[in-house]
Length: 235
Image 1 (tube, rainbow, N blue to C red):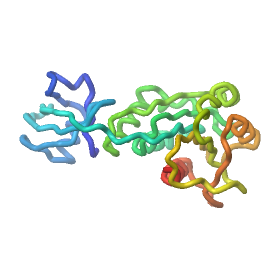
Image 2 (cartoon, rainbow, N blue to C red):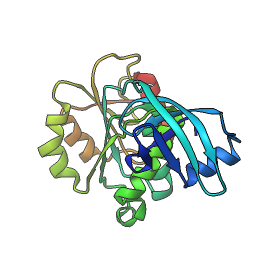
Image 3 (cartoon, rainbow, N blue to C red):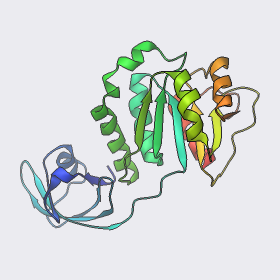
């Protein structure tokens, strides 16, 4: 945890917070905080700043906080991602938040197993938990927007074109396609498929929506690796 992320419920006064949960445990066991120490803090979806440890007791900590720094800028990106397997989904959500993706759309695909959609990791509270962990890692405060689209064709035909409008539309896919561009400074809509890639029908629909296939080479990557590699290359 590189940033102590605070929520509205933590505040007992305008400049005071009391922590009793995993963040308090982390302060004690990892940072080994003592009264008088300072820590980096951020207000969820707000500014970042400093906290002074005022009190440490067996079950809680009280901190005096001030906020004067904006969080890092988000990437100019909408990421459309075929739903990964549940265990990988948690890691991908953390990665997306840590790398500064402002908008994530989880979509269905032919190669996405139906059982994946039944995972409790898709519950709003579970998604939020993983996003917060990613923000804490990267020292960011702003939660990404996460949309869930269980029907591929209606989403791609009816809603995706509006997302792509005014952006560079790309779809990561192995094959004889142009190499993924590097170091962009324009808005991008990027689609990444499941392990094994999109099927030809899906590539065709994504192309009609304005997304052109690009590749990273001959190697087939895990979804979480492909997300990191493509974002790092694009931006």
